[in-house]
Image 1 (cartoon, rainbow, N blue to C red):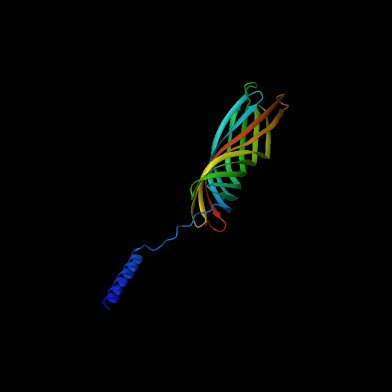
Image 2: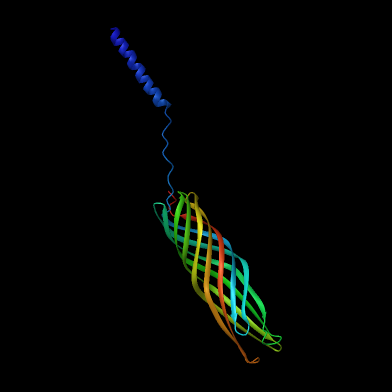
Length: 240
């Protein structure tokens, strides 16, 4: 009888210790979900740009001038595909622009004659591929390159005593763009980014015929731009 009693006490002690140990263990918490970059997204951005227009004008040599202007709001959309630590994607955007600049040059070959130039970039867009590496599951470092296009408007006015002639060029020009950026997931399917782009829209050409002055002036202008912008994207279906 004593043997059965001692066995019962020992069993109760062991089971009590096991239950106490189980109660002492911290409750299991599943790991937080990992953000997935794969999916369709769209968003908005705003930024600032500084550009340069280089004029090559016959009779005048070469003139270069720069300008800075706020780039107005834009919309963008794209698709990302994540494979391991890498993210590849495609993005397109279109953006309004308030960028403009101009200068006045003295025509040394013609006394009292000036050439006044003015140029504007009214809007532009890009279509780019992106390739990046994850600094952490929620932070993406990437490079980007592709096609750029936009409406460029150039006006040149040649003014002399008793005579003035103006030539205007306006067209959609296409070129190339490249840049880099950093993007971070901020929750709820949203991400924020900081991005730099360099844009080259190529050359524009126009000719000013001035019968009163007996001259023909040809102007070639190359337009390049630097853009820094911040943006916010929302990924379809959230980020997890």
